[in-house]
Amino acid sequence: MTETLSPTLPADVEEQVARVLKSVCDKGLTLATAESCTGGLLASLLTDVDGCAHAFDRGFVAYTDAAKIQQLGVPPELLRFQGAVSAPVAEAMAWGALARSEADIALAVTGFAGRGAAHEEPGLVFFGAVRSGWPIQTKEAHFGDIGRGAVRVACLRQALEMLEKVVG
Image (cartoon, helix red, strand yellow):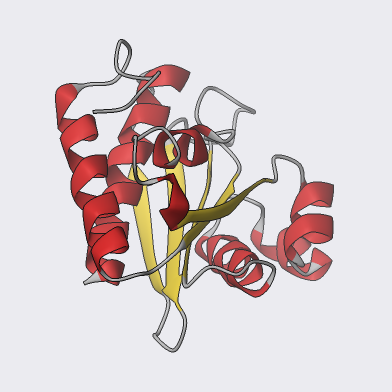
């Protein structure tokens, strides 16, 4: 059970994060996150389970393109040609978080949590998960126009599912 987020989290998310962190702890691994549209919510969740905080190394909240470049080393041309909400950027964010941390596994999320410009699809989110020495995993999700909070919770579910697979 999470310490401070319990009143606002669905029970399935709490169960999922407990499973993931138990597996991470049992294997002696550490995690890092690189978040855009979730604004640090995943990092908050991963540090909110009593007795498991040692499994989390650090989190990067890189909301703007400049932050993605400065904090995570995302190439500016990648952002210019692919856009911040894309699989290649999610991959670059994950690799950047892994390289700039002491973690064994990094998970990145970038997307549109709410309504944006006319050409932006609300709820379009890309994820990247990488473990040292393993190939990167990516996922594209279309959560729809369900609201910022609901998209963020959906992102937590997807991120935790990816972490479960990468942790093994």
